[in-house]
Length: 337
Image 1 (tube, rainbow, N blue to C red):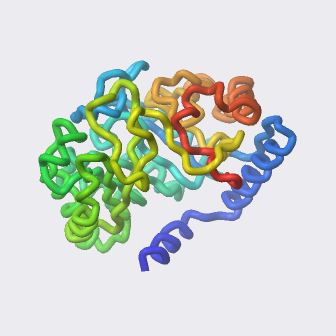
Image 2 (image 1 turned 180 degrees about the horizontal axis):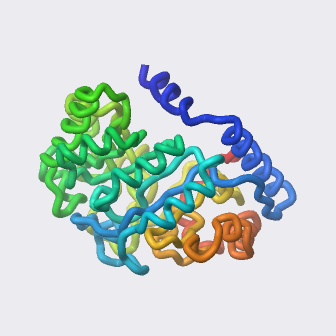
């Protein structure tokens, strides 16, 4: 039932131009791998846009929460965002409205979603669940938001606040309840409510309880996520003992179960935009060390197929290990993507 519901949700956003674009992207991705030289046909199938960097929590493994984000902080202006979606919308299918910071703190967040909905783009956001009011819940449902991830990393306040420092688990529970009841009251299927549980050693024994609680609160799905560990967050939280839920070893080294190939599908099919319009190759570039350009100054097409983007993809195809942000990323562990 859940699978068919997800398929029916996604089908509404498909068009001939978007399917054709995805085919072009995948074809150019494979051609580039064969000739070991970057060729890029089409435009991004998915992008991530950062509404802002502000957040009320202090999660130790998050650059924003830990206070170590090494780039300017601020809030997105709608002018360049509207221009970007106008340029990309014929081909763009999925829009992730998050990167760093808490998206719901942007005062115009429902308007940001509505701009995408009016262009029939599947929109997703992720929240810590600390800032939702009943008024905002109604605005989000009416905005056309497709999917919302809500962080629920524990079943008690003690286990939850071990990672979500400064957070209140009861607010997260209320966020799920309020969104669920608002959808029912307004007769809407969207947004799909996804509870998300990041697994650490201190909460791995709560997984079964978490899933049960998430559905009782009104979530449509309950997902498990492996934790990303960074040097700045060392010793605050520990990796889970069960390797099934581990992305990293206890000494901080990356653990990948599959062979890692010299490619990255995300570098062909997606792009990331900071709150101030900077274009980044992917979400692992938290500090913007590999900035490709700014859509405030140039068109996206010029930036995406320009010299910096070409160099980044060429390095991925020939010596991916030279790119620091790739060392922590599982992309390329699958032969086909």
